Image (cartoon, rainbow, N blue to C red; front, side, top):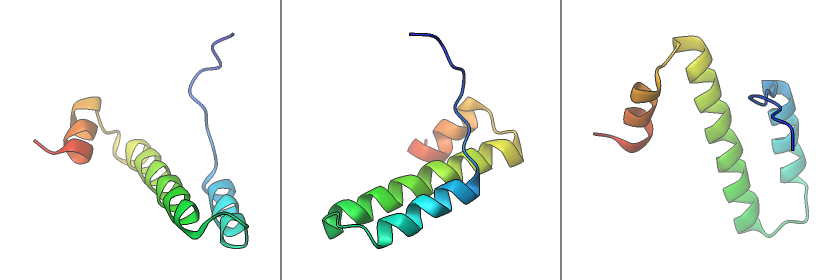
Length: 65
């Protein structure tokens, strides 16, 4: 398998996925967890790009001290 680098996704595409989740036939618990996961990943990506956050700072934000 070739290394494709860091995947990129636009916020609008994640928002679209979340809208699709709302009307999907997924179990409500699975839908909620998937929704939270998507928002968490999007938030982390936005944080990293806006703040130029280092890996050390990111670990602190996610896992605490």
